Image (cartoon, rainbow, N blue to C red; front, side):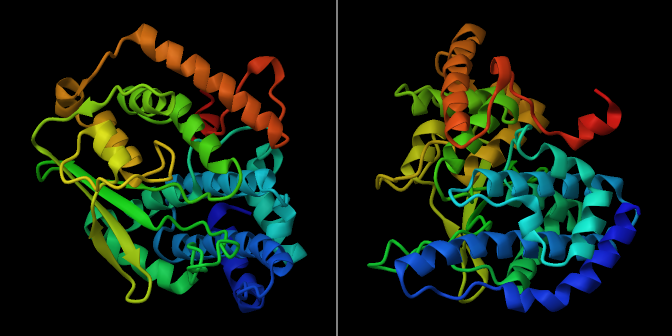
Length: 348
C-alpha cells in the first residue's frame, strides 16, 4: 500500500480511539510516572495521526512529505526507545490493523529505530512539513491550528509540583529568522525533556545536522569555551513562545545562552537551566547559514579553524557514545549510523 492509501486507511481507523488514549492529570507520583509514559504515547500517536491526515487531505502525491513522515516516525520511535520507561514502536498503536498498515508503508523506522540515530526532534520535522503544505507565510497560523487540534498536555510542571512535568512532543518556542526581509527560516526548541534525550539530540545535531559555525559555537560553549558567532547587521531573528490559553505565538527575548552564542541583541540576562543548543534560535540560524550565501560569507566566529572544529567534534562524539550506551544503544567500533530517508531513497 502506498503512502497516500496508508494515510487514508490509518486516519479513519485511529480517530475513534484518540480520546480514549488522552492522558489525564496525575494525582500521585506513582500514577504520574505511568501517565507520563502514556503522555508520550498519546503525543506520538496524535502527531502521526494528524500529519497523515493532512498529507492525505492537502499533500497528495508529494513524495517529500512522505519521506518527512518516515523520518518523523523514526524520531518518535527513537525517543520512545531511550525513554526511561522504554516504549516499543508497537506500543504507540492501539489497533493491530493500523500497526500493520503503517509498518508496511513505512517499514524502515520500525527496523532501525534502535540502530540508527535521528538528527532532530519530531517537531523540527513537523516545521518542514508545514512549510511544504502552507509556505512560510501561513506556517505559524496553520501550526497553531494543528496544536489546538492535538491538545497536547501542558509541558511545564505546575508551580510547586515539579513531579508533574508531562512528557510532550511539542516545542513551546519557535524562531523565525531571515536576511532583512528575504526568505524566512524556522527552527524549534528541543521538545524532549526527560533523561538524557535532550543532550543526545543536541550532540547528534552538532555532529550531523547543523551548519559548522552553529555546531562549533554550541560545542564550544558546552565544553566551557566561548566561541560565539557574530552575524551581519541585516540579520532578523525573532523567537515566539506559545500562549496555550489563547493559542497565539507571542514574541520572546533571546535567552542569555543565545545572546552569548549568537551575539543577539536584547537578550534576557537571567541565567537559564537549559543546555546550549536547546533553543529554537540554534536550528533557525543554522538553516539561514546553510541556505544564505551572504550570511555564510559574512558571519564571523571566534577561533574557528577546521582543526578546532574537529577537536570539538571528537570530544562531542566520545560523550555521545557514552550517553547512548547508558540508554541501551550499542555503538559498534564507534561507528554512528544516522537515519536519513532521503539518502536511503537515492542510495547515497
